[in-house]
Image: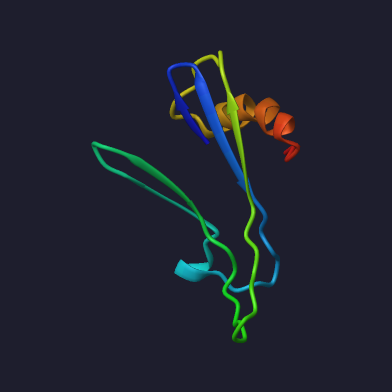
Length: 92
């Protein structure tokens, strides 16, 4: 999730229980500096035979007119984001 000036961006991805993920088991990473914010989704590690393929699907959702989220309180943030996650079909 990323919030900026009344816009909320939510990116959802699947997590496969029992799969092996890179970077200590992560399926999601962020990076930020003064110029950008990177929101990166990672798929499970798979071994592919020549000519084979794999699939990794991201769902992007953009909501406008969203009120300011609470800051610094994990429970308040979770309650604030819950209705938006339900709109994506993810739920909580």
